[in-house]
Amino acid sequence: MLIDARTHGLWQRTAPAAAPVHALAADVTADAVIIGAGYTGLSTALHLRQRGVSVIVIEASDIGYGGSGRNVGLVNAGLWVTPEVLLRRLGPVFGERLIGLLSDAPGLVFDLVARHAIDCEATRAGTLHCAVGRSGLEELEQRAAQWIARGVPVQLLGASETSDRTGSAGRHAYAGALFDARAGTVQPLAYVRGLARAALAGGARVFVQSPALSATRDAGTWTVSTPGGRVSAQWIVVATDAYAHGPWQIVREEQVRLPYFNLATAPLDPGVRESVLPRREGAWDTRQALSSFRLDAAGRLIFGSVGSLRGRAAGVHEAWARRALRRIFPQLGEVGFEATWYGHIGMTNDNLPRFHVFAPNVIGFNGYNGRGIAPGTVFGRILAELIIGNLHYADLPLPVSQPRPCAARYLRERFYDIGAEALHLTAARF
Image (cartoon, rainbow, N blue to C red):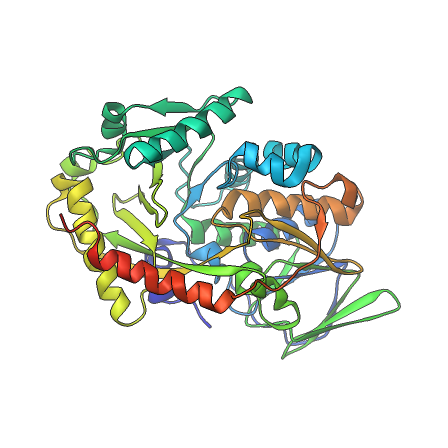
């Protein structure tokens, strides 16, 4: 399972090279072993090393192989669900903690980028959540009211200003948009590789191509076995999320995996480039099968939506994307794609993340529901604080919950996959 053009597309082509790490080939010890080299795992490692805790990260594939290296690159504040929904589901104590933590989470991402000089095209120009039709605008009006009531200076834009800010010259493309200045964009694979370099520079050890096969505990010490060696540690952090295999496969099984693809154009002509997202926000819309779009540093337009790029579906989704882009951005003319790739978003039943204690001293957050960059980074810091004793379970932003397999998971995943293909086969034809 290696990173390639179909799994990571443009991000693999434009990210700085990964740090020269190798597979585990010996028995080693540390204070903590982290399973998974994505945002959560590497942020945990980085923050633990800042406190002098010895850390080993083992990764089944490559750094950023899962969702961390494939996503759109939107560094968002908060979650998909609104603050009011979050409070109803978690209650006032955990709800307020999580809202406050994730509201400030993009700041941690951009602070780490600056502090460790991570070369990842970081742009903190905010994001635009674009309203499709009257129902989409009503949704954004509710979101805006809830955030403004909490003192967050989001802005609800009208149709004309949204057209100016997105460059959507298509007639009535969007009824409005919610602008959030807290947010921004990064090159996601470059960011996760930068976290790995920062953790390595701080003294963490990272091993790739080293899947966890089993975990046993004796006299308070955990031993995690891989094909090439074993890691002994007092703590285990499970940071695999929806790509989990092996001893913590349950993390994968409690989520429905939603396929999501991205397509990247060639760099736009300079004149056209200045008309598309002229302020360089990242954007997505309110459709249930949403679309997202942003520019990279070279001026490529990256356009994505729900669906996989397997077999016949690849042609269906690419044809739909061309039609949709002609409708939203007619100034582009005919477009081709120089990179295509896809991955999966792990969705929980209530669209909220989870904190699990799998066994004594075996902990982890998972279930990012399409919001992995900022939450994964800040949850890594929380896990580090928990391990060093600065936080206790009662202080966390989520209650301890038991992982449970998601009912009818396979059928739901097939529904999303086939449904997205059927939708894109007919959508945006007129």
